[in-house]
Length: 255
Image (cartoon, rainbow, N blue to C red; front, side, top):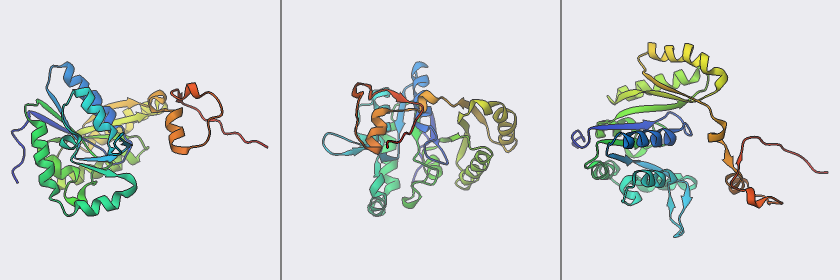
């Protein structure tokens, strides 16, 4: 199948080796910066994860909705996110996808999304290998779209070096271009170590370290409503404060 080499001037595939690395936040930041620079920005997420349910009872990926609003995209979710997997029924979804020509469907939708765009931001799934089951891993699609891969990684001491170098080798297998890595949620008491030890080590191995983002407890904090939705329980008082963020937790017991 012909690669998408003439579709857009620049395509960046934001990916990571592990989930919850901050891909969506980095994607939003890049989109806003590109818009401010006067660029026509497009968005695409080949594989989404159902994280909410609409009033019609349909599952959808909230990240996709957010990007549609930010970029004022008047398209259906499927046009920019061809496959949305349900977290609790993941294997069932994979079984049905195995019967579909997924790479062709993804490529066709990407071609439409990239029309008349200066920059395409492509958001990856949980890891580089997600989608391999039906031929849609990040490196394979990056080559198909002629996109450069930008890794967003959270700091896990020295393990982040192993993860990034393994990702480099995985991308090389597909001849995918690795733009570099952004190290996210760096604890403030470890910024010096990251800058003086981890960053030089990655660069010594041919990895461009494009940014270090310090950890921010406010950004990472959940609201009372979000916690309640997951763990359940009973609200005894203070219902008017459900939208407040929780940064510390105190667990008590009653006798």
